[in-house]
Image 1 (cartoon, rainbow, N blue to C red):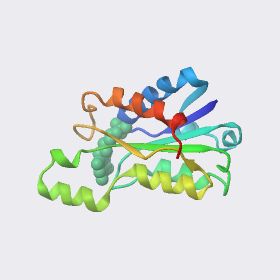
Image 2 (image 1 turned 120 degrees about the vertical axis):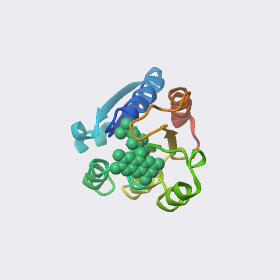
Image 3 (image 1 turned 60 degrees about the vertical axis):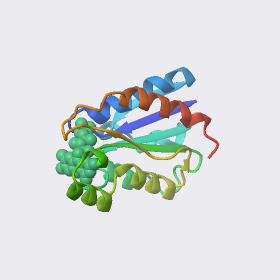
Image 4 (image 1 turned 90 degrees about the horizontal axis):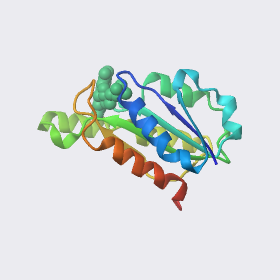
Length: 159
Ligand SMILES: Cc1cc2nc3c(=O)[nH]c(=O)nc-3n(C[C@H](O)[C@H](O)[C@H](O)COP(=O)(O)O)c2cc1C
């Protein structure tokens, strides 16, 4: 099993989640965790799993992640199982105004999953969000452990 985890992280929280996912998947095979700027679309032909993670910015992925997704050639993911995650605010910890805004804009992970599927990827599990307490973090307590549990479900998933 070969897995590539591509992430973007402005303040380091998404990177921590990406590394926790990488560690959780390591017993299953060869896992590479790479910053989006260092990801090479030519690697996609030799992997079994592609996992993409982004901070949520304005309800979607960051520009760097969008650019990476755009550069993936059509159908390049036909034999690749894909999953996506983001980091985000928790709507339930916010006031009504913020809850409405977050509800309208939504989050990055679902949008990334859609893009991966349009490139031929087979989505193995539901897109997942991990909670930060503020823009710069920290991650909410328990999120790294939750990321590890989510990661273990990726290769097992029947979807
Ligand atoms: C410009 C900007 C826009 C953001 N927009 C959203 C948003 O729409 N929804 C949300 O839940 N969080 C939003 N956030 C908070 C980010 O989710 C948070 O900064 C991110 O999870 C931190 O991840 P990082 O440490 O990997 O950069 C925003 C943060 C920034 C800096």
